[in-house]
Image 1 (cartoon, rainbow over the protein chains, first blue to last red):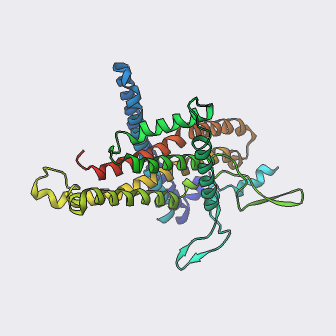
Image 2 (tube, chains in turn cyan, brown):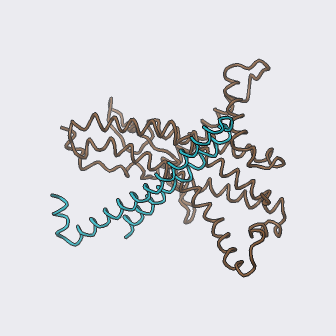
Image 3 (spheres, rainbow over the protein chains, first blue to last red):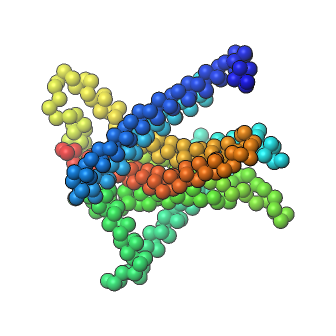
Length: 87
Length: 274
């Protein structure tokens, strides 16, 4: 109901568009990071299954990769916030 | 009752507004003491006490439990962060830096998830104006993380120049065996990537902590936004899940990654060959 009301004025339409853009942007960023994090942990499981003695060395690399990938969502989030606030 | 009243008041971004408590400006630079500064002081104090308590006194050959904890932490930091990333000739100089970076950020992040009465908002009780209890992390502030990233950035280039000489160091930015005609493209990219490190290092930590706090606040705030009692159970449940995820995993990983990347950058500048 609120959404329908919001779309009837120019200002409401603009903020509606901003909200949708924000949501879509962060959502797409999360899709990419989700795929990436899945890849990292999948590879880690495979690697440890094949060579369990390397677990100690791989753990550090795994978390580094996790954090680097996860940060992508936050770049999307920041970009979305910037668009939301500034535009 | 009060649920309905709270609907208009709910705005999670309000938690991150910094009111100057002790205004202090140096020309255009605002050096006021605010919530983030108090949290930084607290974090620094706790980090120092942490280090002193675990590693500075009463050490013996038959270690107590306290000494074992301190030593295993030291061991983990040295094995995971310093060794293999910092060259062995620089490890004595830069291991203290990356280790204290880890401890400082870790403790700042952890303090950020403990409710503390450090806030500009007041509530009345027993005839006194007491500050409300709230959660806030100093690392959920871009200025703090950017300052930390600048230290690493400065250290990287100073050490690179000191160990390799200015010519040798800046030459090492150019990848070996790059074709001559492409140099005009590669060199600007390398320079930009050096500055992108600054952005990625600071924004990663900042956005992670900010998003963690926001997520938690919004989860709890859903009760007030929809002013429905049915939402109390699921939103407190999800809020708790977010909280545990943040405290158990994100807090440590972000501190670890910040210190690890600092070690990698500094090590890479000292020994650019590999």
